[in-house]
Amino acid sequence: MDYVSALVPPIVMAVFFTGLIVTIVKSQGGANKSKEDAVVDAVLARAEHTRQTPRRTPRDTGA
Image (tube, rainbow, N blue to C red; front, top):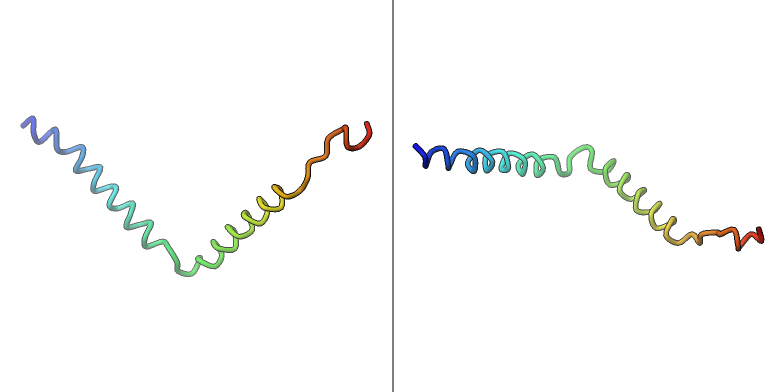
């Protein structure tokens, strides 16, 4: 019986992991794909803009 109790946790984790992967693959694309892509594009554009904008320090303003 020790071998059964040793094998159950990895088998249970493998089943849940397989279910997670199947869920992720099934949720790719579909009706919400364009909306998700638009959100990602907006976040990337904002990050790019933030990275390119020079930071002003008090020394720059003459204060």
